[in-house]
Image (cartoon, rainbow, N blue to C red; front, side, top):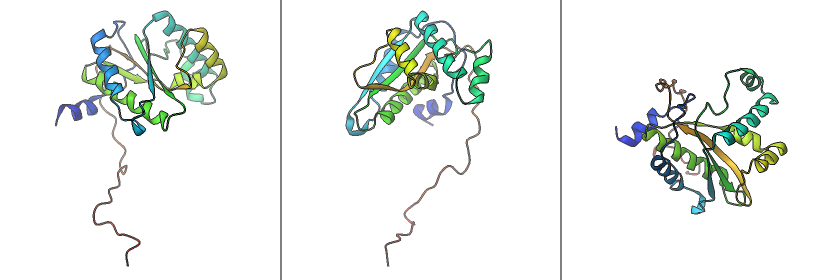
Length: 197
């Protein structure tokens, strides 16, 4: 098994972080991996916003927690009520990937960029966790206003399509959950052409 496959198979979502900041060299490599993701027609419509300011992260986290509390999903409301709940799991770095909404496929392009970054982080023994709460929060008018008030401004026409936290895990990586069966269909060369006579 080569190193790329090994990294893909070992990556896990990390939900407990040390306060130590991701070192600058590793962060640059992670961001570079994101910039080398595939994109529709090579438009590269993304922009990466990196937030490492602890006070700003705390403000954003408190705002995202409100979205959980007001959610129609009971499980999210229950999680947000816990005293020990931290939306960002105390991670020291948050990366938001925004994309030009006028691009051909910004949502997919930005998600691919984030996956590249999460895999790059795993290869460097840096943990990460997808943060859908950021997109949920920004989707509300209150969220957009609060982003502006906090000084988190994205390029023109950009929307956040992917977000994740990064940092060093305080616990060993968990074992993988079993993969769902019957999730692959292979139609090989023997597949019947319905138009042939």
